[in-house]
Length: 393
Image (cartoon, rainbow, N blue to C red; front, side, top):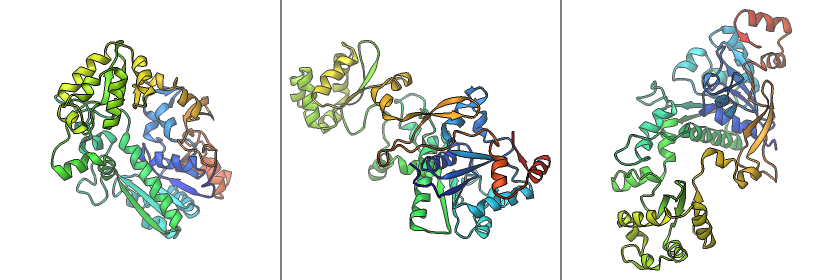
């Protein structure tokens, strides 16, 4: 399904937020030209590696062609200008001031393509007092307040295990690029602040504070507004989730478990009661659920339609019947590694899952191909490589 098959994207971004955005566009059929420095995208060095290829890089760069260009060289900038002139979209996530220094900023590229959509991803935004501050995801997780709303009281701050805000920022960038394309707003300059995207995406957590001035407690898997709505441990030390999100589900849960007295206890009758008396209720439920395996509890609660689920280890995720049949795990033929797994977009369009054309590229794998498409001859390409302007394997 190539609904963006006529879209050409010049990807000057690196690491995660930008490459995630361009991978989404590539999955939807866009032609994405990934420009890398002679050293390559830094994620190529991030462990673990499989036959010298980074699993991290492989996770976010499928569907792209890689060209290596030294942007500090005037002839390298000439190549960028030629590419920008034939592309619809440019996306970058350089530090503020770097695009201007390299001559790849919006104003420079707009001169060679007056219909360009230019998306700039910044850690804090070009006008922020923190504009020059490095913005790896862990920095944003820390400054957004997220790390002090996860985990448990009295324990160290907890980082979400993947780069959550990079991914969300990349999605927001891709949405705005598609909006500009839909509206045919060209030229167009889009700037996405990762810090703002983080606070925005936390949604009701910051809003509760803004409305009440109360800081959210750190509650592990529990919920500040609903009880019981958390993980419980079974007889084998495995965890499972119970989400009795309203009074009807609470009553159904108690009836299924033979806990009618608990359901009618005035301390627990309504959700506000249960939230108020959580410290009395949760130990009672923990004691009950610790007596049998989670499969037993899941079967009982599913029969009465109480939301319940196992807390999976990552290996269990890929044994789940849904994941095995949904098509989210797909395979691609990689130039170096042969057949490799990939995680497909979680969508179906007219009955078909979007699939990228290309596997994650080797560094500079398409340099010669792209330059030839721009009109460069073989001898010129060799000379550019000898001068250190470009590189290819």
